[in-house]
Image (cartoon, rainbow, N blue to C red):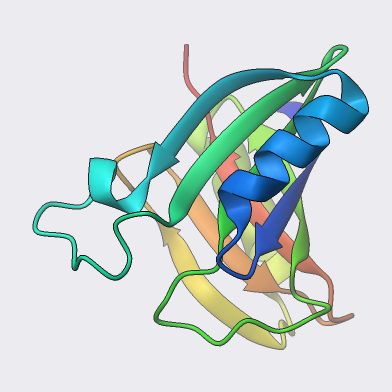
Length: 137
């Protein structure tokens, strides 16, 4: 079952500044904020400060923000994605199978990550960016 459809913003190395800006603009509560240095063992110094993921609570909604992965080029138009949050791996699999049909690009196939038992990132056939994330519990 889909738990939420949320907005995910990707910034060009200034994610922490964006978190503070949107916190103030939307009177949001920062729920969590993690940098690459806090999460990646032996993280190179030049990316340790980059924001891996921050979550802000705005009313009953969640806004997620991260800096672009340094292994990818930052591109305007790719900096906002729909985040589909599900509570079962089976739902993530079903949605992934449907969205990936004719997809322009699969950035990350559906797989287990340290933050989700089933996560994927893709550009669908219409050029829309989607992240699918399973949150169990």
